Image (cartoon, rainbow, N blue to C red):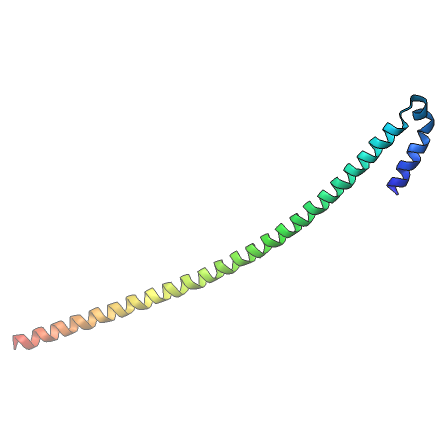
Length: 110
């Protein structure tokens, strides 16, 4: 459609261009401009596809980050629970060791 309009414009300018002998120059400039427009259109399409791919990659990475954060939180909670259990077990062992030491001390004093 645009090419057809370009042809009509070039036909409309024939009398003007013919007067100056520039019709061929005008056609070449129009063709060159059309080629530049098509190249720009192609480059814009490629850039849009690249952007869409990058957006998809970003969403995948965000999802992976979210999953890693959740796993980290679960691991942190498990670690805290394990440390609490360790501390309780250590206290029990210390109490039992103290009781054993006292009992040994009593048997030696008898």
